[in-house]
Amino acid sequence: MEEMLQVRFPGGKKVDARIRDRVIQTDQLPGEGGEGSAPEPFQLFLASIATCAGVYAKDFCDAREIPIDGMALSMSGEYDQKARRFVKFALRLTLPDKFPEKYRKSIVRVMDLCSVKKHILNPPEFEITAEPR
Image (cartoon, rainbow, N blue to C red; front, top):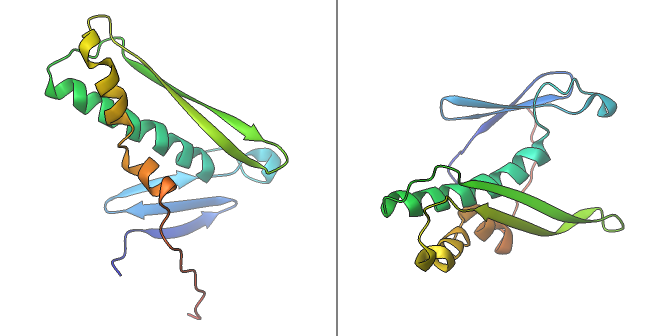
């Protein structure tokens, strides 16, 4: 199995992930014992869903030379307090002013191909181990 990233623990509630030559920092909110200096891991998970869909939308427009001025994407979620998890996400793409109507359904279909979403719908198997140094 190929190693994808390394995680380090720089102190406090901070946990960093090194992916290639980049470091993604996380922290917990002050109420959870952290400093709030970086997004929480779950916030990055949520951001990965929306930004993945955004990449697909932008690539769709770029391939058709459709200007993206004014294009925006937002995501909201329905949270089940009893289950303590999100049960639904809604992504809303605001199209640029000159977006051709004939492509509206197509860009939605393309965003639906997001690889992050695919991994949620068809989750991989997790193997978690703890080994001595």
